Amino acid sequence: MTGEISSVIGGKQAAGGTDYDSINPSRVDEVVARIRLADAETFSSACRTAAAAQREWARVPAPVRGRVIASIGRLVEANAESLARLVTREIGKPYAEALGEVREIVDTCDFFLGEGRRLYGQTVPSEMPDKNLFTFRVPVGVAAVITAGNFPVAVPSWYLVPALLAGNAVVWKPAEYAAASAEALYRLFAASGLPDGVLNLVFADGAATFEGLEAALDEGTVHKVGFTGSTEVGRRIGELCGRHLQSPCLELGGKNPMVVAADADLDLAVEGALFSGFGTAGQRCTSLGTAIVHESVHDEFLGRLTRALAAAGIGDPAGDVLCGPLLDHRFASRYEEYLGWIQPHHRVVSGPTGRITAGNPRGDFTGEGGLYYHPVIVDGVRPGDRLFLEETFGPIIGVTSFSTLGEALELANRPGYGLSSSVYTTDPATAFRFREGIGAGMVSVNNSTSGAEAHLPFGGNGRSGNGSRQSGMWVLDQFTRWQAMNWDHSGRLQKAQMDVVEI
Ligand code: UN1
Image (tube, rainbow, N blue to C red; front, top):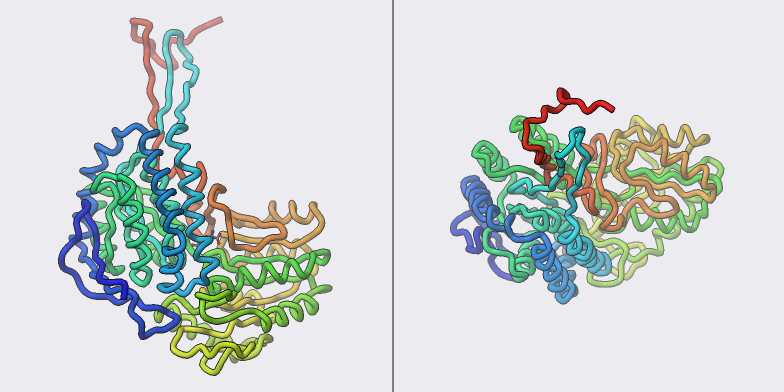
């Protein structure tokens, strides 16, 4: 066990709370850390502490805040391997992917450290002489950041880094089942010279978080909520924020389509499907949901995908594998429920389904003691099927076919999510027509649905979010507000719209 960990508010460990064990999903009897879960009052007191610390932090010049971000990036880079190993141990993400996830934090810091010297406002022409207009970006205040555990360190950094850089304080509530990874990241942030209270870490269950957040919104100590997680919880966060006239930054689920055109490089498409369908055991919000394949190449694609899966590495995530275990017990039992309704309705083309108990198809791994499931390919899914419409958050790909691009787009948009998407084609016209017709916030051409780079806008529409974007400079619109200033040096009252200059 890594040890006992608890919330850190204003630089101090919070006392009290109930116990929660974060387990290693590769060996479920191994406890990675025992966490003290805080109550609602502890959550809202963290928001008060953050609000008090934020006033001073906002007065630190942005280039100096940028230097703190630079130092976070260096600390994360220096500790990349141990942090990645902890992520692998706590949530079962294959080590190469976990290391990539840590790299994503460094990329985010690299991007934002310079933004400290570039947090531009504007000078704007006035309609009157001797009057100057300006805009300034000002921090929103306190951001409450609530994150999932499938990306326990990279996705939180997408909120934390720009929010802190822009002069906000943060209360971060990570997922309980990824608490040790979150705490390790918090320690690296804290070691960078951030003043106490500017970043606070609160471990709490969903009920305490909602209650504490509501109290903080009532008290006026939270000014922006950033949430990554399920569509269902995102809707509740949206309702709560809406009642307080706030618009949260929501990054929710996905049912990400991959369209394979008749002229696609099929080996490339298979490689992309394998990685985005089964990498992170299908538990990325950008994971592939349904492969929509042109009827003329459907059978060939399906055959190659099934063969590639049979040869793929499934097993201990510390090794060189494509697919490890599911995140924890809660995700495993939800996924089993999905498997339950797939069996009677669908044609599974990939072999066994369910928990791996008697070895993987390659025969080099037994699966004993871990939350391992056979990756599944299902052929012939149709728009009325749950498998076609719902995010499964597990290692399962649905396959269907189409005849025209219009039909492919119709199928791709049907589930009503709109996060990521991809098209495999060698024809630029098909690629651009796909981009125009797809409702997703992100489009890949000849690349997988997952694996977005950290400096492009990341986010979704429809059931995937409220149109807010993370990453790159676009996220600054979430963590800053525009303030307008006019300065009249004419020495008289010039009235806008009334003292019109004639020529
Ligand atoms: C998520 O699963 O919440 O694009 C984010 C990707 C990663 C981020 C996934 N960079 O797949």
